Image (cartoon, rainbow, N blue to C red; front, side, top):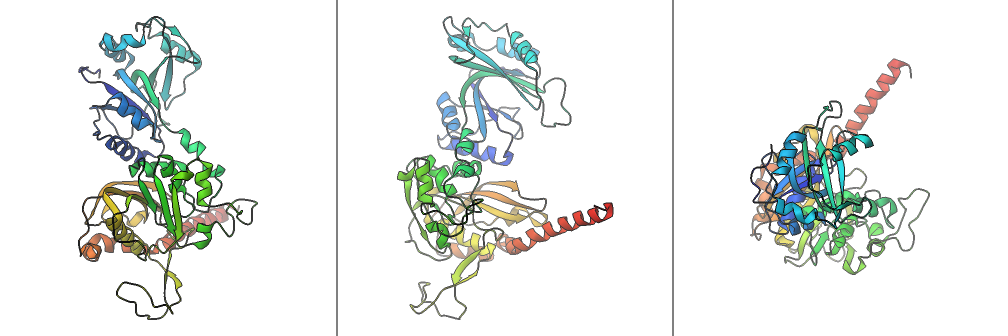
Length: 465
């Protein structure tokens, strides 16, 4: 349907069709950094690759596109409709005074054609551009370096097995800015100096930083820092970064290498070297060996954001320090000098209870916690997500790991300072007991793999292969 109210500019966001679950929280968070609400138009569909938003300025749009890895491009929307006929009507009703600055003599321009879920031949694209001769362009065409770029976008739905002959919806607008999809390639783990078995994918790292609303001069902390992939993405946005991990070898860059054809890590393979590689070493505060289950920080709100990927017990073990003996601890939780710590199992439910309590005490008011929660899909329900009285759930996005397991990207915001009994709230919370079932996530993960491989073996036997 053609837009009738032209008093307010509308902007069209063309989004990547990967990481569908993460797009809406990312765009909302980036708008919130400018204190702007998310205002979709009436035909908004969350799964669509095209979102039309209102109530924004060009500066708002550019601010979002300067950081988003889920959005490809953004346009000032001039017209749209369910057919090219409706698009023509919509474009002809667009105020001439808003068009004319970009169509004057002496200017240069080009028109691109983008189709989602369908590939057009070059000749077909040219025909579609020629059919828009009703637009009063007076400038000259420049395909290599134009002053202004326009785009005709056609949406053929999301079903690759049922592509319609004609588009479901068409849009036309002026290009405002491109997103930061290039970061996924330039920060690829494949080319990183220091990596490990569980180094976070670059795209997901930047998505987590955006969900956390990380901004310049923030202090960001990762309590399960590993090889520091999340610190790399946060430092790119100008935040000071620090972290801890229980693994001495990882923190100090020692031990066996995770790279193919390399047995041991080199002398300069560490987190600081990664930030140096990307020109953000000045944002590196430090990392240290520490047990996330033990209190080592002074009781104060220190961090603007806490972003982490706790171990699930699959490729990295879940462990903490403790004692085999019934050693009596002092009231402050410390052991006597004669105590020799040993490694103990660290249940998943305990990991997330400690993480939420730590965040409630050490996040600034309004600061965000972003973390991954592994779940066994046949048993999962939203009520299982651990909660805390001081933290408000902002978003819960799923990333599939297998047919029976996934991990949820949980984003929470600190809404109040902790009171005396808040750290014990999980004991009376039914959500806590619900997630305790996932303490055996490792066993369930591998039992599913074994069942699947068993079925494959049976099929192979039957077929004689």
